[in-house]
Length: 136
Image (tube, rainbow, N blue to C red; front, top):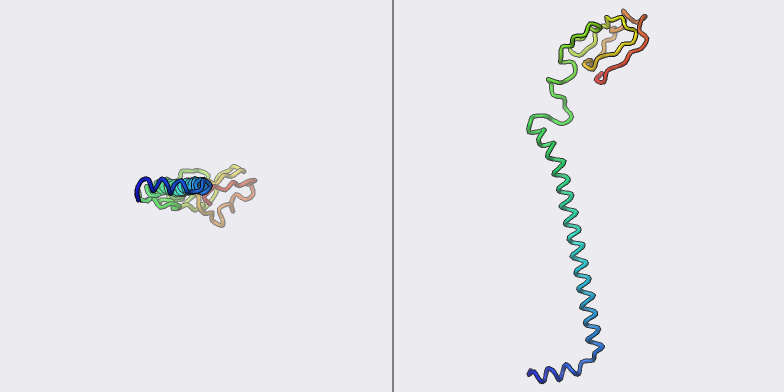
């Protein structure tokens, strides 16, 4: 087809078809731009989620690499393993065996993890209150 023939055929096209084609092209361009925006939002949300997981996993991984298991008290810091110098209590391996103090308001130390059945038998008549430690 020659140049003159092309111009002749172009002049025969109804302008209404041309404007409809332009409108359709503009609509499809807007849709594809909107689709790209949604795709980037999805990828952004995925990247943010991965970052959050990574930030939460790093401290746990550091603890595991140092030999500390989450939720487990290391043996050297477990309640009852330390020797407690307390003149009011007889404590052996974390077990409160006997209260030998004279204070009517007893506060059980945090090192105690268990109380024997007869721990307060000898002083039961003078005790008003007993505050139990956090590890019992």
